[in-house]
Length: 360
Image (cartoon, rainbow, N blue to C red; front, side):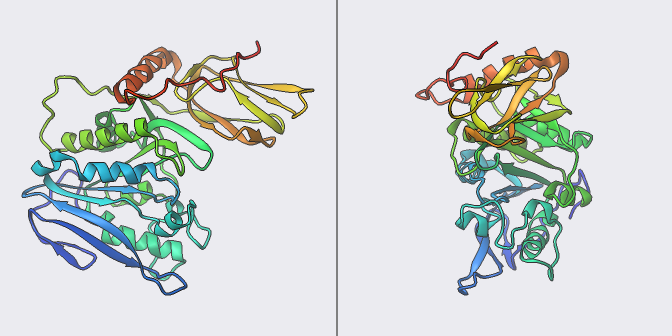
């Protein structure tokens, strides 16, 4: 590991027992526990080492095996022509949880959450051993990190950065990334962010999209954000564009709205939409249509996450709303600008919920 702010020298870089020389690009397979069929498994890392010294950044995806947007983001970053002028080292790990990725599931075969199992142990559970390998072989050899995530299955997140914004470097990386929203999210026990932070390595988390789905707009924003961060920490030359990167608007208070009863859910607001206190944002009805119960926004805010499943049980999470106080109007403008900048030209316009007019 390195002291915060100190750039590494051009010393030997050893990952998975493989030495990576200056100016070299290598794919390294780091062994993990084999399948019960005795088929070998490994975590693959692409290591790109520049010819000049600089920071060492890891980019990780699929810590939750069904969160695949980040896999495509990393693939595109590794093809980016800006890497020809790289300073320092980029370590890209597109699939950390190979077991979950193979089975389209969030967790490892032992049912544990990898992102609640760091730093792990070489003699612990399967999940703990994978966590330990990742920390020892990757994380501790880096100065910075970006971890890529999506919402869970049947849930989508609007693009946002989550980080401990009391950390000056994490705050600077968050500002550089260039998405409209940021959540000042304190560290969770056993998370990668906690483990890296304890080692003096600032890590930010990019959340965007839904599990088991590629979402082009969010992937484009992720690729651009990673490159922006690399420029900001001195790994890549500054952009020639005179267009400034838009700083995100920060919220430190979010809450989930839950279904008041079981039934069929009809939503009226899309991701990124501003809502006001008292606004009806969804209805829950019984299948025969004999009763309907509204879901009402308790505060002004912005929808940063929502369920995509129209069938809910009482107490199911339906909307994740971030509060921004008087800044909520600015957030609305930032979100519009984000869509204009990143949405593919042939994409269909966003539809608010199912197109139904809410009952007021």
